[in-house]
Amino acid sequence: METTPSADEVALVSFNVFTQLSGAVTAGMIHLGDRLGLYRSLADAAHPYTSAELATSTGLDERWVREWLHNQAAAQLIEVDTAGSDDRFSLTPAAVAVFADPDHPAFGMGMFHRLPETIAALEAMPEAFRTGLGHDYDSHGEGGAVGIERSFEPWNRAHLIPTVLPALDGVVDRLHAGADVADIGCGAGGAVLMMAEAFPESRFVGYDISQHALERAEARRCERGVSNARFVDPRREPLPSDRTVDFVTTIDCIHDMAHPQGAVDAIGSALSDDGTWLLVDIKARDGLAANLEKNPMAALMYGISVLSCMSSALSEPDGAGLGTLGLHESLAREMAASAGFQRFRRLDIDHSVNAFFEIRR
Image (cartoon, rainbow, N blue to C red; front, side, top):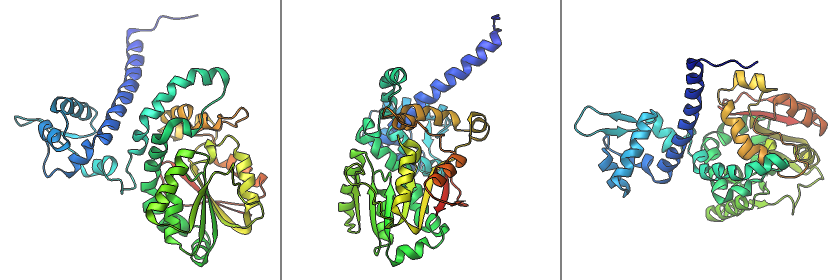
C-alpha cells in the first residue's frame, strides 16, 4: 500500500536528483573550459584573472566568460577572490594538474573532450533498450577516439615504461633483446608508440576495430617516424595463431568487447609458451553490492557503461555485454584459465581506476 511521503523526504530526493543535474551541466562547462583554452589560460596567468583579463587572453566575449567562471566557482572547481572591486579567479596547483597539464598523470580532460559524443549517444539509447543492440566506438566519431587517447595517455606516459613493464617478470629484458608484441585494443596507438620508441629492437603491432582510432594511430606513427610499429584491423589481419608473439597487452578493452572470451582465446593461441600477457582493466567487483560499497564512482561507471562500454560490448547481436564494471578478477581468472593460462598474478600497481595482471601459461 502506498504511503504519502513527507515534505522532507520529497525534498531530499529532489535535492539528490537536481544535484545530479548540476553535475551534468557543470560537466558541460568543463568541456567548454578545456575546448576554449580557459583552464590553460588560467594556469599560465601570472596572477589571478578578472573575467575581463581571461576574456582578453583567450579572445572570447567577457560576458560569456564571466558566467562560465561563476559556474566554476560555484562548483568549487576554481578559486575566486571576491574581496576586491573585481572578482579574481585562479587555479590551484592541483587543479592545474587535472585541468590544464596534459603531461601530468592526473590530467582528466579526456572524458570531457568526448562528452558531446557520449551525451549524443542518448538519442540512440531508446532503440538500444528496445532491441538489445548497442553501438561500437566508431559511433562516437573521431572525437570519441581522441577523447580516449587524452584519457589514458597521460598516466601511461608517466608509468607504462618505468613502472608497469618492470613489474612483469623478465619482460623488459626481452623487449630490449627484441620481441614480437601485440597490443590489442590499441586505440590511437599511444601505448604501442611509447613501447616502440623505448625498445627499438622489438616489433609492435596494434590491433583495433575502430577506424577512427587506427587512422589516428597511423598518422601519429608517421609523424613520430616510428618504424618498428604498425596498426591493423584484426578483422582483416587476425592475431597469429602459431604462438609466435612474446608479449601481449590489453589495456582497458576486454570489457568493451562483444566477444571477450574469443579475444582471450586468440591471445592464448598467439602467445608463445614462455610469453606474457599484461591485462589492464577496470577495478570491478563481483556484483552490484560490492561495487556500490567499494567504488565511489560506481554511478558514473554504470552510466558510462550504458552510453559507451556496454553499448560497445552489445554492438553485435550475440555480444557478451560485460560493461564497464563487468570484468571482475574472478571472471578474468576463469576466462584466462579457459584459454589455457595457469598463472595469474595481480600486480602491485597503484591506479585510481584500473587493476593490472600478469598472465602466463
